[in-house]
Image 1 (tube, helix red, strand yellow):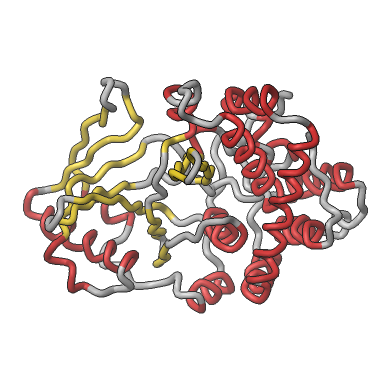
Image 2 (cartoon, one colour; image 1 turned 90 degrees about the horizontal axis):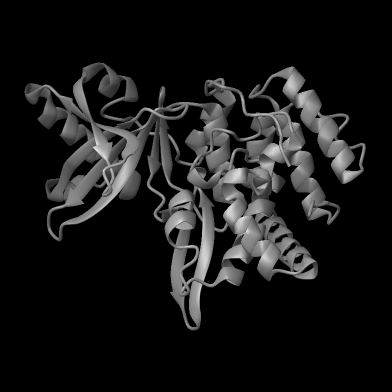
Length: 349
């Protein structure tokens, strides 16, 4: 099924005072030693970063004046400590910034910092991005309603995010999907659950390059979890199918797995299971989720025409008039989640 393309350039929304207050309450704010803009202004050169096959990754490795490099690297190592050890700088002497990459593709144009622990040569990554309230709401909803917690920090116009490890969805489909060791039924099952999570909390644009596949060895084979890595399109666009990964052509290889290996009854079972888990997570984090949605309902993170179109589409889909009173995206998200808790949520097949 085809649908309109997303807006060519998504509008970035500022962090309003109410959201700042919420983030401070839950330890998502800090004072960073360097801001995104400073890296942007101070970089002096870059070279294309190629993958192991010599193909362009759409990332560039960036460089700074030699006189400033040590200062910048020290600041970035401190940010890693803030993100990973709650500001305990005792490990600082063991950390080394190995590379700083800049993404030329996407809305937030992030910096990716590769950092190495010199004791054991183990490496990790984290990201500096331009602030966008949509992305912050997306991160927070992911933290509260998905199976995985997230670590991120906000300061002024800068967003710091941890790296989410896994195989990018497009790479997985291209290189691993047909390998016999991977359990096709389990992969298809997880995609059904992922599809459900995105639709409930209205996370859009989940094409194959916007999520990763996390693989865990288990007693009998492998288990899979699909995790979103791009949250820019949290409840922003106007049409329902944008929030259903099943409708993106980039995901067709996994869709075909489901068509070949899952029955309609099993798909419905997995949808029901995931909705039950989401409802349990919502109840477990009831107070915090209520606070987040209260802020979201007072914020403007999409345009009036997109809001009207989406609430009309969801009204028809769920066969309920409850979306008619929604005035903004926060109220639409809240209504969607409420329907899940009340077991009145309808999914498309």
